[in-house]
Image (cartoon, rainbow, N blue to C red):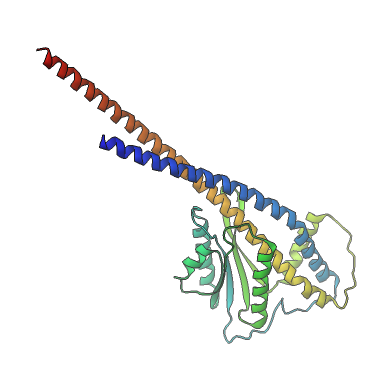
Length: 297
């Protein structure tokens, strides 16, 4: 009977775990759908800002800005890496892939420093050789524009003050529910050539239109520099939301696998329990029959 009691306790614990994994799967599914919907709703706004910046580069005679290149105030160049991780675990290899990508990028950068988004990443990089300048945490909620604004303002201010000379952002892009790939993008300084190359694809995406030459007041440079913070904000917000939905997709897959494993364990324990219970009943019946036969002798 002791063995049966132990098996029942294990089965009860597995059932409770199975309820948790199924609930987390459903929660991640809802968060993923919400994140994708929010990204689709805000993407046209940031695409229009990008389009305006590209039009300015094409239509104006020239735009000279410190966002393209600047004289370093550091004796040694320094690069900042923004790593977008999660605030909670149980997301499969989501965070591990980001950690590996960050380490590979930092190995080839001059004097890298980190700006970490997510509690899991902060705890991990505390034990790395890289300095953490700032840590942002959103308590596992869906990222908002205010969060992207806070990060973008910090990056731009530190870049203008000369704390670092380059800024890279690493986030996870969800190509599909089974293909989550860490992406690396340099956001500062801006590359005019790259922006010009992207302008053609973006204009095709937004729809073909005639080239129109605008006049900018007070100047093209001042208007451009006013748009850059919105452009950086859009990149950061897109990376945050992509990272968030990728995290939810990874957690869905992890919880699905955990639920399947729990169900397999539960089925195996149920079979063992039934066998042990049947053996116990058979033994009791045998003892009763044997006792009854002994009394009639």
